[in-house]
Image (cartoon, rainbow, N blue to C red; front, top):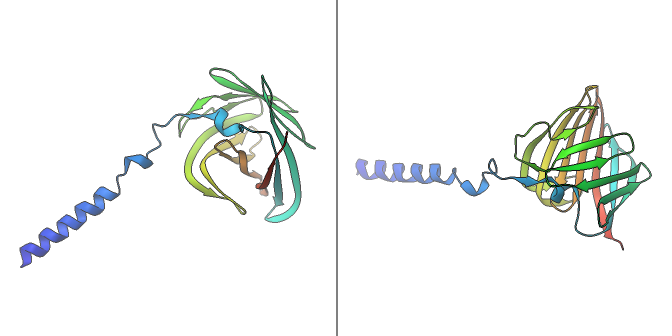
Length: 185
């Protein structure tokens, strides 16, 4: 009787150990095309709620449009244009131009390059991600550190663009949370 119990226990343990090694969840070898995360396939207006130190203080509406040669995001904060190339994405922001590695793996450093950026890293992939308002599938988190010490986490949804951004500027936090979108022409 004792041998039967030990055999059953070993069988259960092997089953549990086997369940913990699901290769379908391993994204360490998956290559991510940053263009698919930084842009969308349709034109739309996005609304973000803005929080400072945990308190909602404002909102922002940003229009996203695909043109023949570039992708554009426009709001009262300015215009950002993305240009897709075979190995990189050039992001022209109001204050500077940023070079983005087009293809990246989880763990890659130096993902975004600009004079103000010390390092950006593709930190993590989420099959499912929930911000304060909505849930998204296929989200990557990029962590950045500026030369001045500002820390940023940017969450990009697949064909969504930015779904959430957290910024810690020496103890002052700011969070942008995507709360809605509407298709436009």
